[in-house]
Image: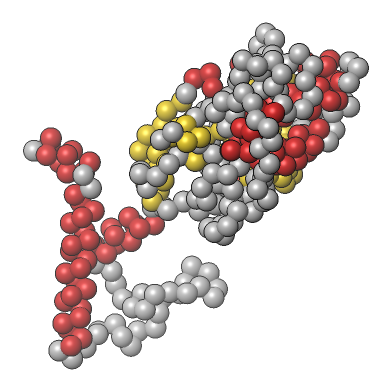
Length: 317
């Protein structure tokens, strides 16, 4: 029996039986109405809504059966988390969801928000994740909001995050913008949804100036880390990125900012990490900014630009 119940739940048997029961209840209501049966609750005033001006469905004033209560609770659950995998050093999280997911400000429009990017002449590039042979991307039809924790921002680096975000937005065609500051601390276990801090929907991309003591991955010669979380909605569609992080080693980048061309080099580091956020991986070509070690490059190379352009032309979801 226990094994049968587990299999039944995995195949969504209880939900199916609830739907069948509700269909039967609705059919009984229809037959009662056709036969002229009276509604004992018809003359009762409707129960007050959850807030002034709230709309309610017809018949909301009558008591609910236990089956209907369970069905209503089930429908209120927007998404069911079925798996969560932490992908180690890449800093990416992968999990599947079932149900409807809304952006922070509701369902976005159906067209892309930014201009189509120019891929240029092309060159070496690689993608952090692929799905069915295609790169995993952010939706070009949703705004990609970025917040910045500036608590440890080094002197002389003001505005560099905004400049780096603007460059990535230009190269991808994504509507990617810095929307403000945040007190959210950097963490390797960041929650993808933070309704208390950011409201409903996915948390925005977080860029944070931090230290190796807080983010151990920044130890040694590493001056930045970046990555994004990918989800699959409805359990059958291609994965898409929904939020990400970029950790910047504040002490190391403070020293770099003091060097000749320091601001340009720090901006390049931020661009590199944001390249990871939107879906680029490292390449073996030293001419590209996405090479694992920066030898003085201050802008994206031709391969970087081709990869970023592809990442900006994903499907609208």
